[in-house]
Image (tube, each protein chain N blue to C red):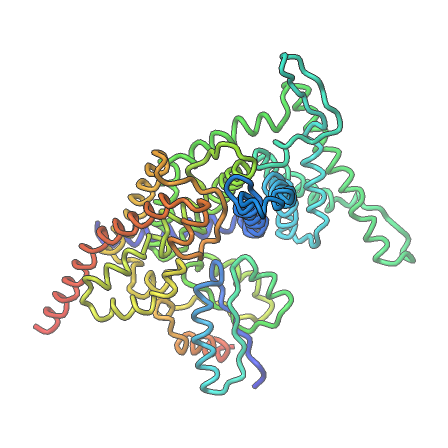
Length: 107
Length: 441
């Protein structure tokens, strides 16, 4: 399987960056080929134009962006979903990583 | 309230959030002010440098061996001037690019169209009133009011208008210059923006001229006195800012980023309020605005939205629920940097009728305390912008350029927030116990 690129989007990219570091720990443990980055919502669309992205996960606090981003990415194959609030609140890197990987499998 | 009504309310708030955040101009304005922040903070740094080092009365330069430092003050003054007193120009430029981007026009050129258009509606002379009451006209100047935050709302309007006009004109086939096919595409593309640009600037300049010719007032005077000043009065006053906070908190309770909801109004008004304060402080004038962006951060969102530093400490003091204590431990370090998503989604506060009450009330109470403490002169007014993740105490100290009164007021606000949260943490404990008991029975 080729490298998987996941981006997490929240308002300023601050709270998601804590989740990203937890997810990276899981990735390192399981020795997976996954790249993860936290992006502020204002830069998400720019980022996707210039970088490879497979999955975009939204923080629950910016879930109002879901429809717009799904619309703008519908021809790109990028999967868009909102992170489960409970997993988000407990900074559960493993569950959120699983959510991203499940989205790719659905493809 | 029955759960059906409650669900409907949540549903409609969700819809409002999606609607508001899909309005093109709201997205553009939010992106613009996010991009402007480094400009405001550069001005803040220059001003702090000015007062702490170069100032002969309060800074290092008061030490006689270091008095030569005062000579360098123009360096920081000029930075402060061209960041804060030029904010409207940068805002117009960035907004032009953002609006164009949302219309699928790429590049930075639309920023220049927006700036050109904005400048054409303002006069290039200044009426200087002399001490004896007579006045002279100074030609070839752009007065400060057109570049500092007073022009912000006119700037926003002209920027949006000019780019929409440019976008519309670009789509008109009749206006396209047709070149033979042998001309390379890049060459013919360079012509394609030419006519829309000329027309856009000409039309906006004509509108500006017509307004002045018909009313005797410049567009600036009209927009400033009819739109911007009343809005400033509203949001930079206590009831206005508390209402804004209330709206933000209600959205947070349903799990939506409340600050994102109020930003389109909050950023232009509160960021310009702090820019005005910084410029006044740098110039050695009376600092005008009590309510501004750092005021919001210092007195109303310590620990994150809902002043949850108080909730964290309340859980550590009286909380018995193991799940609460776990989340509180997890949230402590982010909480110091005013990040509280773990609390909002982990405890959760979201859709939690017990914790939602103090979550909404606390910032309103602490904001009121901060306001009156500043009004009575105990706490100094904020004079420089501090980014929101700067921890409490430190943010109050820096933002007010070292007002101990502000630091004490903030600590009082934190204590008050703990007291407000404590009974609700106890109720949450009790309801969890009762639930466990009933499940066991």
